[in-house]
Amino acid sequence: MSGLPVADRQVVRRAALNLIAADRRAVAVVLVLHGAAAVAGLAPPWLLGRIVDEVTAGAGAAAVDRLALAIGGCVLAHGLLARYAQYVGHRFGERSVARLREAFVARALDLPISVIERAGTGELATRSSVDVTTVGTTVRDVMPVMVIAATQLSLLFGAIFLLHPLLGLVALTGLPTIVAVTRWYLRRARPAYLAEGAATAELTEALTTTAEGARTVEALRLGAERIGYGRQRIGQVWATRRATLALRSVFFPVVEASYALPIAVVLLFGGFLLDRGMVTLGEVVAAALYLQQAIEPLDRLLLWMEQAQRGLASFARVLGVGQQSEPAATSVATGTPRPRVPASARPGRLVVRGARFSYADGPDVLHGIDLVVRPGERLAIVGPSGAGKSTLARLLAGIDEPREGVVSLDGVAVTDLDPAERRRRIALVTQEHHVFIGTLRDNLAFAAPDASDEQMRAALGAVSADWYADLPDGLDTQLGDGARELGAADAQQLALARLVLADPHTLILDEATAALDPTTARRTERALAAVVNGRTVIAIAHRLNTAHDADRVAVLEDGRITELGSHDELVRAGGAYAALWRSWHG
Ligand SMILES: Nc1ncnc2c1ncn2[C@@H]1O[C@H](COP(=O)(O)OP(=O)(O)OP(=O)(O)O)[C@@H](O)[C@H]1O
Image (cartoon, rainbow, N blue to C red):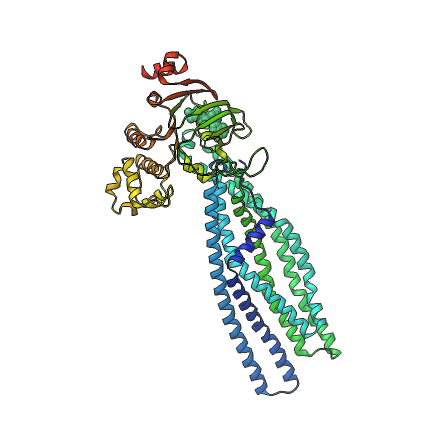
């Protein structure tokens, strides 16, 4: 399994800036409000220092009351400004998360099937759940907190410098250690968290595949092996989490110690300056209070820095999904973008020339296939199990690209077609058909977003989906988990109605009815007959009557086409097909 790519820092930075740019007015309001709140928060320590100085100078209760009232006013203003800033910040966060999720879904839906198959569903599941949620939390909760903390810190240290530059300088004594340990931590955190994310994805993959294949596991007594595999993956997650914990266990204690140091130094050095009349007692008190006040935002900044690191690693994984190099988008030979081929509604001529194919680094499973499928022709492909029929179907549909040779439609390699365009022109129909949670209309609209209700009803009619008449809310009926469940044949009909709406000119049928029981298969085949009319059809035939009714039959054996001709020709020729036909027909 190759996994999905991870975006580099530059891409992550650009994407983060884009998020800010998309909502720049909200960001500006948040910054201004937090700045104003931080300024209001600076006044109380300074006013407290003034109280100390005024009392030292012999001022009465009235002066203290006045200053205390001012402190109360500042605290109130700080609270109100901070609250409103948080409100605007959270709204910005929610909007950004919604944008991120929408973009992620669009990118994930755009991924070619072969990419998802190679990466494994666990990888995509983890990125769409754990990683998107982590990025969401970071954008919504962490980033605003960090911005506030950074603003507060700059103003607090600026205020100490204003009290006395020397006090300001000694206040910075803790910073070198904090900077050093933070740099040490950040350098190690990204790879450590990326490793943790990858290990979690593998664990998810291991658990979901075991759960999904529970019956097979039970039947083949693979329980112990799967448990062992799961334990291995858990061990890997444990190791990667231990690594990130080790980083945190150095980072946080060092930082804690660095907080206490400057307060002690400011008090000692403040006393020294006070003795020489260079500062007042109130100024030293204010400086110590500012430093005490700085601990909280500093703490928040560092605490959330860890979450921000986690968020950045997740963001890189989320953005990586969009970076998957689609095999159809780039020429293997030159690496240059390929031309996108314009739409064409008429049936095309599908040509396979010298196509060889191997899965990953395995041996070739197709050895130089040559085949021409004429527009409007019905071609049946037959052959023993493992001969490469499904693989050839995937090549014809443009899901996989031949290692050598080419599969072209009207002279253009099918993998050069824009993926959406390719899906509109060539459809691969397998036994797998999914009913999405949503209304019947939603389920049909995937194929043709602009189709009218009338067209949708006509499509259901064309595939004899009689069950439609019994639906309580017609096209608005909710389907899928927890709502109305469709049986295998009904779901297959729904998939075929989608095909009618998508209206591709070439259909590749890969065992579309093989796993259905005979009654269901007959119903589905009737529906299929309505769909295939007027189109080029390439059918992988597991029942030889399909081959009998086809214009031509191709016999595929061990990755090679060994016979090609009409049913009658091949029966007359007395080769492999004739033998198959005889044994099937009794
Ligand atoms: N994803 C895959 N990874 C590696 N090898 C594969 C993969 N899919 C198929 N193969 C191998 O490629 C060869 C051709 O398989 P393919 O499924 O195309 O044959 P088929 O003729 O469709 O067989 P069947 O009728 O049993 O479906 C087989 O040896 C198979 O084991």
